[in-house]
Image: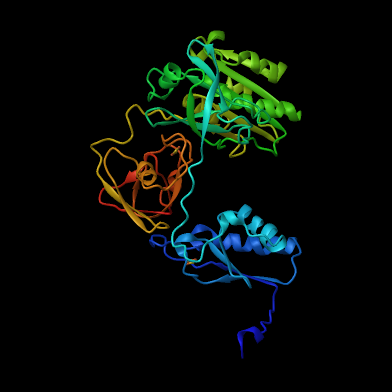
Length: 438
Ligand code: FES
Ligand code: FES
């Protein structure tokens, strides 16, 4: 029979196969189930029902032999392949592809694709359009787009990474309201014993200069479900909280700010904090003696319903807030740290080299002494998100599929050590090869 005469009868309009194959934890190819496909397939089924999509079948399948790219699914009759990671991805596939009949380009897998497509390094060029000294050692910078127009969107609590002239990345929170996208406003505390980034910003960055930066990322978002927001800032930690305050003020949501600093001269953005929080701002000036500072025991004595606590500042303040709020519901304290308390560089020349297997990329790379896994992966042209590069922020967390890691971060909990690694700081234990879900 000539091909043109073949009629294909379909039982379903749409037939989806989601791989839920599971392999052992340390298998170098990993598996779709190990990357969360079981729950995501269930989400897809439930969501399709909620959306009342007719004549669709969403099946679990065995290995589809595209394991490095997983979790994967294929949609028939048109045989479109997708990779997905989150319930948002699944929702996009249902809404855009299945209901809207348009491919979700960002998730498409090409037929001949063997490794994940390299992610584009999302960097932008900014021009310094304003500099102002806020205190003796804090300067604010207004960074405008190089080409006239609005900057990419961001949400309160976001930060950008500035790439300094010597190639270092340093994270700075945005102070402005997300509505104000003509420029990004950051404030930099000059740290005499820091890693050199803040001194470079203070000493070298002049009006009209051009800098490279990442797109805004938010690891410190507002909890939209909270009815009251209790914000606690320590010094330069005011920056993201000011942006949050601006949003909460615009929306008329209840918020209180406790702002801790040594004295009025070392309180950047004091005027703006008063404008935004009005009678709901409390300054705690300790004159350099924490005993004279904020009384957290009293402020956090009684847990309040539907309240979210945010703290940004030195790690001592973050720990003190966590301790004082230990009788509040778990997870109620949100914090952002960019710098750890470590005194020495985390990667030493006396460290030993080790190998990493990038399971998705089908690549083995060697990590020499003095370099991080993150450096080596980035040098290989593979972009993994990062921020603090000091083991505190959580941006560079990667699934550990095999091998024993020597964890040098202060982000992961011990219970996660077997399955996760922060690749900016942690290394392999002696003689171990690490298999990473990259
Ligand atoms: S494990 Fe899913 S494609 Fe192989
Ligand atoms: S980049 Fe912040 S923990 Fe690794």
